[in-house]
Length: 115
Image 1 (tube, rainbow, N blue to C red):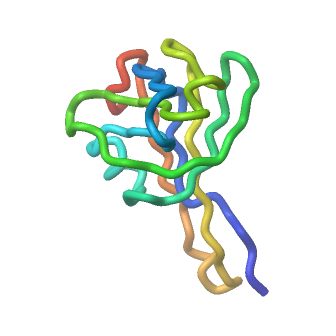
Image 2: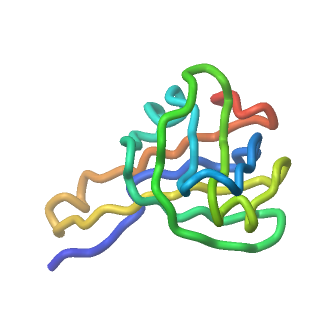
């Protein structure tokens, strides 16, 4: 049996950019992507802690070390600059994989620095 489980989570990231004219996605600092074990174009669920909105999109690489968390396209209408968000990815795993799986949990400060 396969179950969809949390693969990674970026906790309390602060949105730094919102660009409604971009085609879509969420831009994430590449250092944060590495820590969360996210890959470019990976599907993510974004939960906005500030206003309660939730959306699905995909990840694009931001400048390494910049602290960028940028909402692009339609997502820029749901998450504004300064909002706190959770970014989560999920993976399908069988019972054997579940026994040893530990999601990558990344905690950020108000300036999107790794804790």
